[in-house]
Amino acid sequence: MEAPLLFHHSQFEDLVLAASRAGTRVSVCIPARDEERTVGTVVDTIRRQLTSAGGVDLVDEIVVVDDGSHDATGAEARRAGAVVVASGADHGGKGRAMAAGMAATHGDIVVFLDADVENFAAHFLTGLAGPLLLHPGLVMVKAFYERPLGDAPTGGGRVTELVARPVIDLLFPALAHIRQPLAGETALRRRAVEKLVLEPGYGVELGLLIDVAGAFGTHAIAQVDLGRRVHRNRPLDELRPQATDVLRSALARAGAIIGS
Image 1 (cartoon, rainbow, N blue to C red):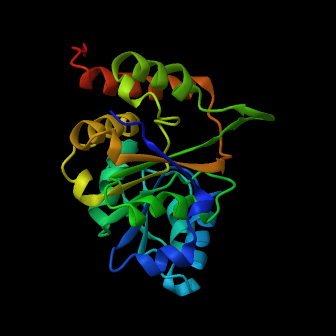
Image 2: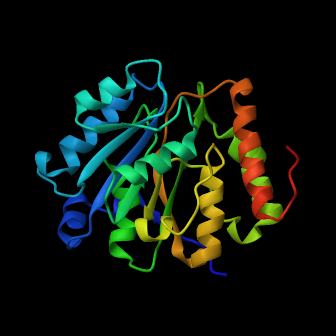
């Protein structure tokens, strides 16, 4: 199998992408739970810089899926210009939120973004959408980036490094080139996602990656370097359930029997 293609976000200029999309619709979906501090900035940046309202007609719609927030996440997203929908459950999980976003959007390309990014910039979106707009054979684009942990320049992505990548090395070695298999920054062609089943929880990212590779081949997956990503790092006690979801998703696809 071929190694996934690598891009850098600087290869994709917003005006070039807008001129080249030729009727291809681009939707942005942002699953969010209790992210009132940052979600508005993410939405506002996209609306001002990458929609017709801001002069660059690249993005057709911005949808935030409020996954049972207990703060003003929905209100902040709506104030910034997003359409806000509910995930359909009280904290139904990331996969359910992504599925709700798919149902609420209409784009041929769906760009999923995380709501907790503190240094969000327009290149996060252009870097993800660009490969799909310019390379028809691609189905999925996964982001990778530097991930600081606290004051240290690296060290973030603990579930990725301690669970996801080792599991891939052992069970799905053809995907060992994927640097951030759990990245929430992912772009997909709708026609591909509609053929797959989204995991309900945090295992959705790894499950999608494995399923896309199985259905379309690793040559249909690209990666893009988004530079540096700063977000809220969670304590270890919150990471264990995420790690369990990731491991469950991988083992299920490897044919293992998982006890209840």
